[in-house]
Image (cartoon, rainbow, N blue to C red; front, side, top):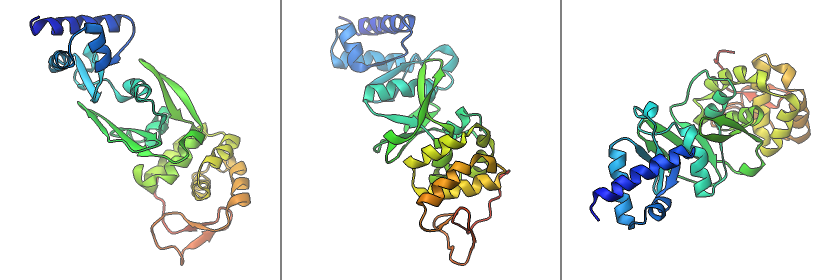
Length: 267
């Protein structure tokens, strides 16, 4: 068998997968389908990758790259992450600025798709496509929904869970000013009752800070149930900006928040 035969068979394998609406596969699947050695299939797939027909966002996992995405060198992240997470057997959800964008709050497009997992994983760099993974405790309790992409259904935090995560992970979302701006855009998608329910899966200090920021953003009509949640569960006041001095700051009694930062978002 010449070295060209596995490559030819591999190209036919890609065409067959694409004709069936599949756009990803594992090296083990390809080896079984082609009936060649692991080394031979890896060599054939690497050659097809050099021809920009394939990309490998993770070791042993490949995506078929159609012509319209050749300039990216990979499928867009939102189009392969569902299959990748299924292959890895790991629960996940798209979060923070990436989730906010799916909900129409696209003030600043993140450079990488932001994804929460239950454990650590290295970021993905595939051509010009990036995925950042972060750890979220209690991931299974966070309210999520699915959104359609051209190649599958992506799990995304709900608008309410997104708002809470943005406050809780503001250092991964561009800082407090950008978070405040995104919240002002996201607020119209937030359901007051669902927001209070989502707060059960987040530290109470997130709810305190979020309520204050949404009130400042003119979305006070969305935070009534959340304020009730804070009154019932918050024992102590919390600084608006974690890690900064706050003891001499003014205090917002309604949300039990020390206002130790000036928010300059486009509220």
